[in-house]
Amino acid sequence: MKLGKPKAGGSSTSVGAKLGGFSQQLITALVIFMVLTWGYSLLQESKTTPTIPLSEFATLVNDKKITSISIEGDNITAIKNDKSSVVSKKESGSSVLETLRSYGVSTSTLVGVTVAVKSDRGLSFWASLIPIVLPILFLAFMIWWLARGIKGANMQALSFGQSRAKVINPDDTKEKITFKDVAGCKEAKEELSEIVEFLRAPKKFIDIGAQIPKGVLLMGAPGTGKTMLARAVAGEAGVPFFHLSGSEFEEMFVGVGASRVRDLFDMAKKAAPAIIFIDEIDAVGRTRSAGIGGQGEGREQTLNQILVEMDGFEPTMNLIVMAATNRPDVLDLALLRPGRFDRRVTLDLPDRNDREAILNVHIKMKPLAEDINLKIIAERTPGFSGADLYSLMNEGAILAAREERKSVAQFDLIRSIEKVMLGPERKSHVLTPHEKKITAYHEAGHALVASCLPDADPVHKISIIARGHAGGYTLKLPLDERRLMSRATFLDDIAMSLGGYVTEKEIFGDITTGPSNDLQVATAMARAMVTKYGMSTLGPMALVPEGDQSLRGIYGKEYSEAFGEKIDAEVKHIMDNAWQRAHNIVIEKKHVLIAIAEELMRVESIEREEFEKILISHGIVPKRKEEII
Image (cartoon, rainbow, N blue to C red; front, side, top):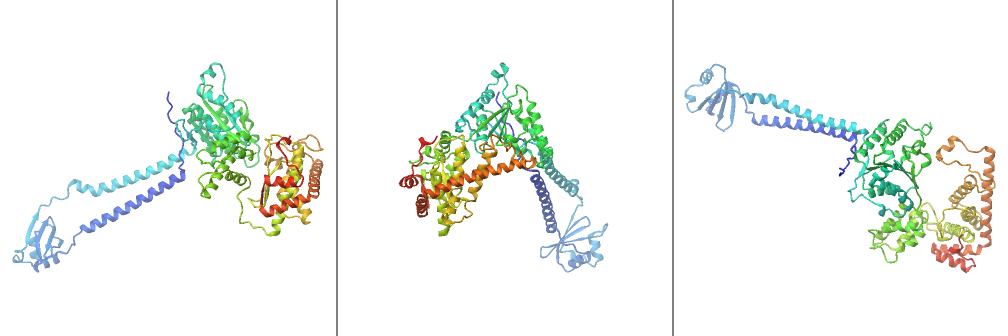
């Protein structure tokens, strides 16, 4: 049976807009009424003939200024010599001649005047009704027109609780996407292929007694492609896709969210088989009854309605509810129990191969230069999400267009990596010679310490050109994909972060505000080692609970004040050791530090190849891929 196109519930026009339209109708009606009244008055004025007293009319006749007289009942209409007309009125029951004689008009005076008598038929029946019927008809029309506007506003008010879901139909070729359009996510695609097969051929599952989960929860960092993957499932299955955000259920009125949930599920059931996708479900699916954070009655009612609707699915109903969140730890447990969102699919950040595949998707419709090498771009973008890679390709195209070139070159993409990571260049941020020297030594300290530590990542670029909030930066990237971080790697990263701080203190005898962000990053890393990863002398303990970070200050700490002093002491011990390691390298390799800083002040940016030449010339062997374990 061919499915009809499901209609999206509700209109994007708000109640306020409808009421505004009603006000416009009212103003328009008043304007029309005033224009008609004004036109009618002008018409009456144009048709009005001057009425004169009978004595004045007799005087005109005596003066022989009248050429013809027309008599109709008691009305006298006379035509003057100048072709103009005047109107007068005679006495009832008397003739015109008698009336004029009584005013001294002789019969000889009337000899040259044409007199015509018309029968007095009076007004016709329909003509007498016109002055009565027309105003009534006009008022009836105005009432109907205004009532139609009020009805529209009332209908919109009644549709206030209807779903605002966006519907993508399976025959919409412009909006439809499939798994081919989603690069990477191999494990997630395999997991969701069962959902596609169930929507295509549910009978073979039902015959064997199997039930596909009603709810699928997509979890992952922002930009990993959760929404796109959900759309691809609907595209592969060829079913309607109902999409809306969790925040779209909520309004200022309690109960509106629950009403919209009911309307959404009713729409989807009529269009089944179908997929309902709720993006950012944590907006309405947070843990209930916490009594904090200003949680409202409306949000809990909305969540309760979602739970009830998912329980109300018939076993044979071909309806799948998919949801996405990057905060699964704050979701209510009732959402995650079996029978609801019991199928959970995790989307990780793409690895190098996946990043290359995603870049190949985004290069479509972009003219590329011959030197493009997406493998290098994929290697230089660890930690980038799919959204970041899209932004990278778009920024590369913008840079090429800005420079009046017709194709995107490799250099454009390399520059785009730094722009996405750190922000645009601040060319107007001009440093004084002294500030430039401090920045150059600061970044040279980071690069030198990173190059001398065995577990630190190799340096790819050093620059003292301001980007974003950074006055300068040292870009280091791992040679291999890394899923696990060791204690030694953390310690080397902390020492590398303190390299700029130590260099300023050693070279200039003072410190500036430049290392402030370095200190924050290093301290946070050291505290995580102690309280989260068990990488300290305090032993294998996790002292920071997982969950909503905003609740920690309310629920209190997981440890006593006395133990908190031990944590602070351990963090300080890690920071002091890292400072000492960085200090020893700066003192021992001071000549290398000076060489790097002087070259940096001369050229402002040093790429990896030039930096490694400086290291080799001073007896330092750069890290190679086979040396990284």
